[in-house]
Image 1 (cartoon, rainbow, N blue to C red):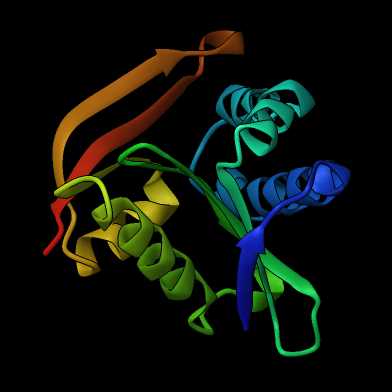
Image 2: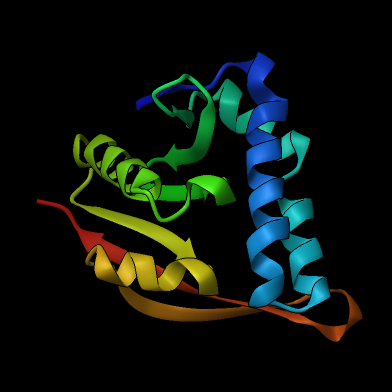
Length: 153
């Protein structure tokens, strides 16, 4: 496994990882409008800006195939996605540990917005929910998530 900064030429790869994961996992937890909101939020424009700002990282498996991505901006962990075929194999944990190590160089705590499918994983990693949010999306659907924090040692 290797984690490295994403290049601008890999924008489509980062988007594919994000969108494939959202389409595979999120419909089990969220209504249609919320899933569409997630997909629109992880747009070319947002991903491009994060790559240009050098906040986006790619995780590859032992054969060099992209397995996941994470965006680290200040003390925040964002856009952490692991392709469905790699889930449950430690790839997400590697991305979380990488992001926390990077954040700990400048901050004493990590923060993130946890979707329903990811919340349990973050709780197991020591994160604590401190704010609940909901966003009204199309069709009157709601996107609900928790804002979480973890003190880093």
